[in-house]
Length: 347
Image 1 (cartoon, rainbow, N blue to C red):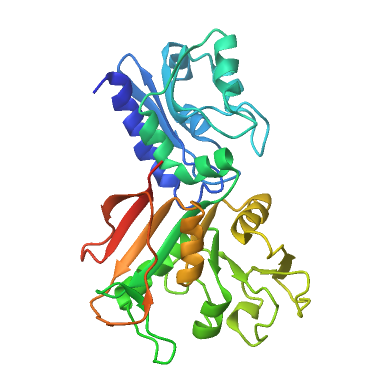
Image 2: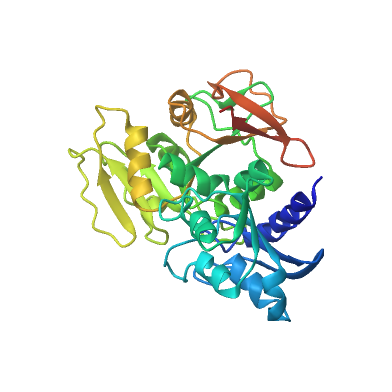
């Protein structure tokens, strides 16, 4: 491993500390090195606050050393005014002689401009150190800005023999246990939105909240073509922001706090339409928790990025078949009991 890779790996360790509060901004870490010694570190703690480069520079006790130093940063320094000033300008102002960048920022207002600004100022810039690892850390942010849609995670629980539910004429089976139920709420807390179909809402009357985990509730997204879901359901409780996707002929015209009805064309593929509306609202991550039809629709359209599949101990013998993934890459287990497999979509 090269010296640059060693310091970039430290940047990645620091960046991961912002996993909970940095979003919707990316997780970024920065390390400042002078004569082979780390003299400053920082990461992006919270959206709206100082970026990693600013925090790292602020941590240096002797500012005079900056002009002899290299700053390592896992993501390209920003070049535009947002909630904070451009980091590229700050690096130039402080006189750092060299900048090592993990990967380019796909955000349209940056996308190479930060790197070019540094080079135009006469600073040596190296790009692409541990690039794959840096991009993977912020795969949700990267997907949102490069594909103009949310990063999509599929999640379902299936029986040991591959069914996600019992036949319609039999009582519903409980596949998840108390542990995996809590795990599911943790996954919800990691996403900005969660989507289910009409049948799931009718059968389960879910709250779709993170009540068993610490974290923000995701925006609830529900497909209700005809607008006939009963008002008594949890999704209409106005406690959590909810988007209802219906046709323009739907019977319900919603007037309720925190509930918005969005009309789409059900004569065309609805998944791309829903993703476009979510992208317009700045929703970077979407968790799909619906039934087989909704999950398989995302799979068949090729619109998914990773999947979590829980396999329970129960055997059903019959019922609703689990969805079938296509083009997946098996990555391993997400729990010590090896009940939950992680898959990522093969690029």
